[in-house]
Image (cartoon, rainbow, N blue to C red):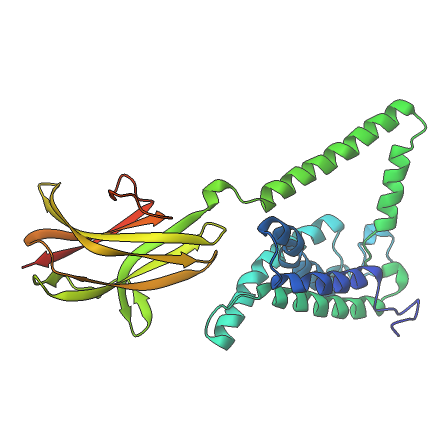
Length: 315
């Protein structure tokens, strides 16, 4: 049935979906530069799941394209199908992530793999549904007609019209390329580091449950969370200090130690840091300054990349 010209399941678009998903699936785990990964994997996430599902739900060619079937419920035009493809794909992504959370207890990441397998499966089901229709009534992507129309437009007998058509085609391609580059290349403003202080509760970072009073000479341990969204491995330095604050002014400072840690892009680490003894007073805060690379000789809020603090009463 697959090789039959009248009942073939593997139409050219089904073969294209199967080939593309199989080719790009390994790039989920292969280390590539971010823009390249976006260009290669975006169609699998943002178009193919919805498009292949549309071939299952709407296997027929629109009536205005010459079909003879009377069932219009299985027919949509190319514009509507494209809109359905993108909208449905975006809507399916949270469901893929939810499936991970439901089965494994957490969202672990290879959503591209699920989207690719889903697209391949729906492409085969859609191909089977179309194979049950007459050839005249099956939906097909009219790539041959599009190529013929472009060729005719570019090779028009009128030289002036041909030039205009060529310029128009080049302009459209340049516009599509510009949008693709803008989408693929991350902007500088998209890079950042999350930095927070809390405590380690049974191996889980929480932003509460840290001590709010501390006697002089008593030691305690806090946890610092660093999440790297800088797009590259980054070495961080964290400097801690106690500050007595009176009337909004820092009147005394005491060093509380420092440490360094390297975090891979897209990952986070939780580091425990022990502090002890401090200046006395009711308005005392324990402050953490984060630096990319080595800290300056005189660390402070003016030079820190990020800073967080907690208030403690030191007796």
